[in-house]
Image 1 (cartoon, rainbow, N blue to C red):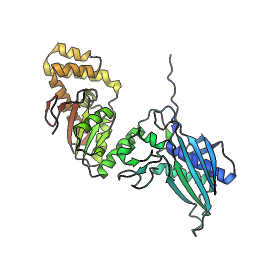
Image 2 (tube, one colour):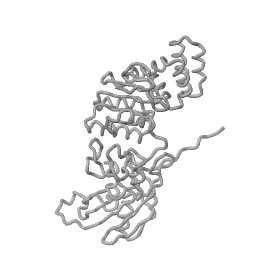
Image 3 (cartoon, helix red, strand yellow):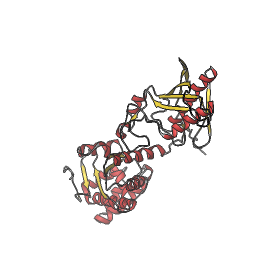
Image 4 (cartoon, rainbow, N blue to C red):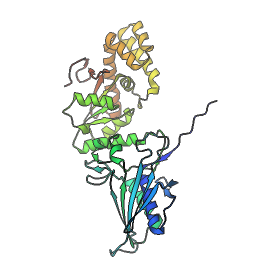
Amino acid sequence: MKHKKKLRTGFTTGTAAAAATKGALQFLMKGREPASVNIRLLTGDDIVIPIHHCRDLGTDQIECSVIKDAGDDPDVTHKAEIGARVSLKISKSERGPSTGPLIEINGGEGVGRVTKPGLEVPPGQPAINPGPRKMITAAIHDVIGSSSSRYAIGVEIFVPRGRELAEKTLNARLGILGGISILGTTGIVRPMSHDAFIATIESALSVARASGLTHAVLTTGRRSERFAQRLWPQILPEAFIQIGDFFKMSLEAASSKGFSRITLAVFFGKAVKMAQGIPHTHAAKAAMSLNKLAQWTFDMTADQQLAKSVLTANTARHAFDILQASGPEVVCHVGQRIVDEARKYTGNRMEIQSVIFNYTGKVFFDSGICRHQDTKTLR
């Protein structure tokens, strides 16, 4: 019997930043570089993280860094160096003895800066989310105590390759410029979890609404988004949001945030799953989708041979090639059902439009026009 390999967990950029901070502060307090540090995660668990390197910058300032380990989760920041420059001074302010140390956390090289409203961090601030700030503060308290008001601690988080890594993320779309975000809601990265993607969708919707937009264009990936942006150049970039497989979650989130109109612009494979109301349109459901598509084909055309061709198609794309030539009304039926199923997740509180692209990027179906088309542009 074959056993599946247990996937390895990792830690977030926020945890890495807290570890680098603690390593630098320990160096300042004890005069020697620690080999590793213990960090309390936001879950309450502890994790030991190796220190990559430390450097004495003089004037009571130390720089330490760690190598971010995402475990077996696919992550653009895996193996990235995350560092902290920490300064320690005796506080001259006359504060109460129980107020604790004065702590200032900033972002340096490779840490993005927020430029648009709608995120957890206000515009003008470094993209270091509340969770990581809490972990950094806890790491400082762990070294010097939480009640002493003697110290003033300055922390500057930096990521040497942050600008380069940010180009592989959606940060610019969210209004985070100049580097990556320091993230983490628990401190730990669980392999193949959907938390990060869901958080990105939520953030993108929030930014769009905070920008005053009431219409969002939901696509399932970069290619469908690129075609949608080419189709509607007049729509602001913030309105285009990649939802991956998260059909139900994205619609519910859009509804809760007060959007009045949603356009779903997709390829046929995802369209067939959405038309069945499948909440999470993962590719593993492909066989079931073709079964249903074949049934719809027979119901609409009474052509048993056509239905059989759809059922035995290699992929949804293969089925689309068959139907666009011999059963375009079935593709239209799929497009209309997307609208019907989407309304179930939004409670009929918004206008829903579905668009199905062919695989060269032309619109084959648009529910706003209610018929298939090869070359027409949308309204």
